[in-house]
Image 1 (cartoon, helix red, strand yellow):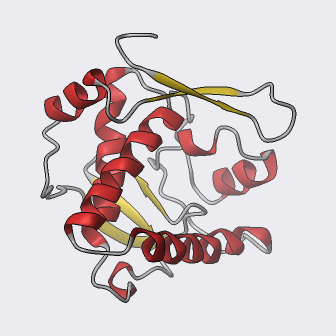
Image 2 (cartoon, rainbow, N blue to C red):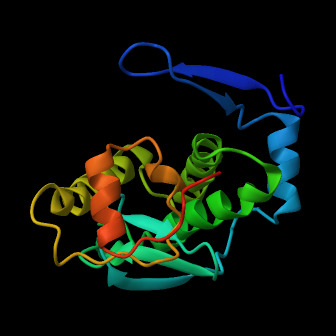
Amino acid sequence: MSAGIKYHSVHGLFDGSLHHKLPSVNSARTKEMLKEIGFKIPYKPKLKWNFDFDLPYLLGYDTKADILYGDRGFDPDSYPEGSAREPLATHEEIEKLLERFGLNYQQRHHIATHVENLMADYLDFSWARYQRWTTHEWHKSYAKWQGNTSKLRVPPTLDMSPYVDEDDKLISAMRKAGAKDSGEE
């Protein structure tokens, strides 16, 4: 244990050498962090949406301002059970707010996915259908980065920490498209 957080070990996909310790979403420390940043159901995210850019992972947030970037081809209101804006924005905002606790991206993402699930439940969305929809939308945004990327644009202050473990080709394309953040935790 570290800093009072219970961890689950997740091994790398290829050789087992990569390890990320994921905090238990039900631990007292995680609950304390969420309380400290003001998370409760229902949660009203404060990030402002911007759909002017191309994002390989569908969504991201600005490192300098309260901006939530959505891929320009994505419509969060297209989810069949209702607008997905609140659970999606909650995920991104919680991920950003958890940075102050020194958690790495994988840890922040793990907790943010949990609270996104809580928000989807609150909105009475089927989590399985919601996950299929977000995965489908993510694949569409990611596919743009597999071909000619010369016309794609990325905000300069997009948090690049989710891309640290990505292949150099994607990161290079994102840098050419405007990303300036170092991606360091």
